[in-house]
Length: 338
Image (cartoon, rainbow, N blue to C red; front, side, top):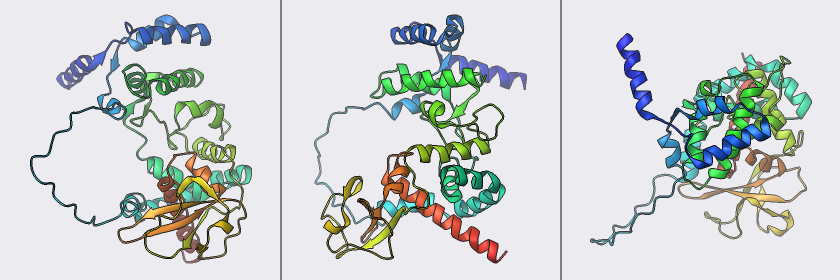
């Protein structure tokens, strides 16, 4: 065991990097000392041994490679076996995720119901977020957040400014909660906890929902309240529509732009009709889900847009909606037929 620990220490030392001499780090440390009254010696100690996060950095660095001229006639692309939504759906909407979501709603019923009463966000939506972000707490992240954010803040990449801000907020968070920055694990981008909040969302959107005086994103009760609060602060409307599938003529839809960014009056969308009554009178988005042989088309209401504030992707928001719907249906069925 002694030799194993020694080998691990040697490995860490070889991979560790001293960021104190980088000019950008010096400016950052000065800012933290002057603006937030951090201890300079403590910050220098933190930045003296940072495990370089190569995988994280690779996501944000554009590699410019020379384009080679083809020597052979390019092969014709075969028709894909599945569409992009088929793959996305298969990844995030497995039955096992639905089943775990039902169990999660049972186990945390009191906190989920209280979040609904205070913020208007149904339990199944909060559950679906936790199910997608961390698999109900099972996968909260395996990357050291301080090392990840330091790498992304000070190694040249297209989002340096963003990650320096995240690092600042992360250090403020760990000071308030009296946590060692080196002890916090998270995602490859530095997101933390059951709901995978970025540090910049912590101060304004995370809440102390269990009343213990701390805001802890790895605590189920605080995470539930914080996610519901996040939705409410971004404009969630209680008991309002989210989305509905619509009919249109043809198999592929290219008539107008699709995605949550584009809004239309329903009256202007001739030939597009919801498959059920859709009690929503504001502008809608058209959300296109690409299947292998056709495009599914959906109306997106204001609440659909709110989900995209958590992750700026129409596919992500649709996965949250559909997972929430399946969890609620199975949860209700289990109550009727235990």
